[in-house]
Length: 134
Image (tube, rainbow, N blue to C red; front, side, top):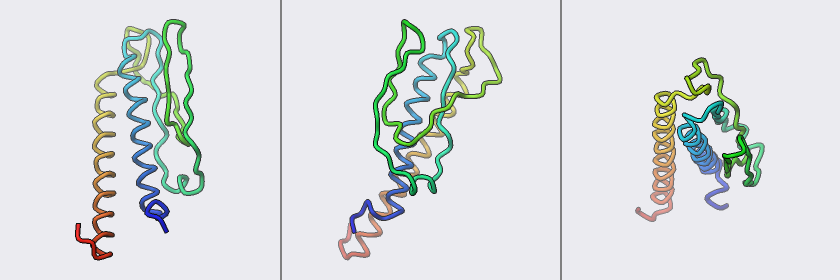
């Protein structure tokens, strides 16, 4: 049985991939905060139960939002991007508020760091259990 076959490591890996994908979407939102008519996107909340039932491969696709702009979305493996429900419309005509987006970026980063810390500590525990003091 390989390390990645263990459910805890598989779930943590999926969670870290989800955070990486979300970070890309949030970065697009920040970059397009002043683009007229841009609608922000975010991912659906991560569900560990669904990651066990569906394993899919990553795809790369491009989508044109305006003729002068393009967006590259990669690594969306099994994660559904959705338009954000914006309650505030800025003068540019979009719903991106930089303060809210930066709070999401910071929260996402902290959650990613927590997942990587749990991953590292789980590996250390396994090494100690196997007699290979880390």
